Length: 137
Image (cartoon, rainbow, N blue to C red; front, side, top):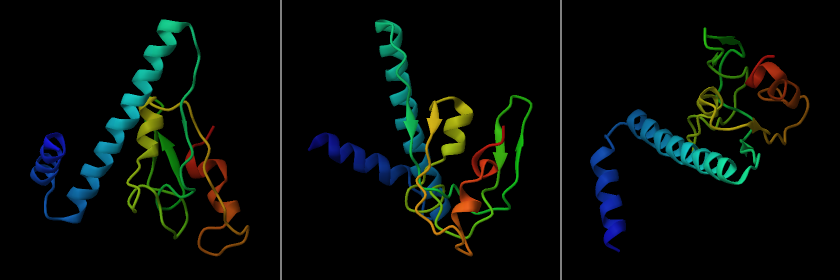
């Protein structure tokens, strides 16, 4: 119970009153979890001569944007989101920054979940699942 109280106090101290600060804090917490999982898998692999990979199966919309993907000098993907109008996992209830996880090398692969009608006008399967929605080759 004492640990729970400490966690609550830390959360209340770090959380600001505006929604953007809360969303960023939530994404940071998920980032820490993903990095810790990756570090633990890497440690296990190194100690045991294994090649276990770590993947994530996010919802199909990262965030809504113009659908363009470019790359910085280090080869990291840069995008403001897919050409969609739906609930994205970056800034919606999940607060997952999968683009950051890929760029940081914290996950080995992604396998998006997409249960959309092919011709849905706001976020159809063809739009959401094309390669450039997440990353280009």
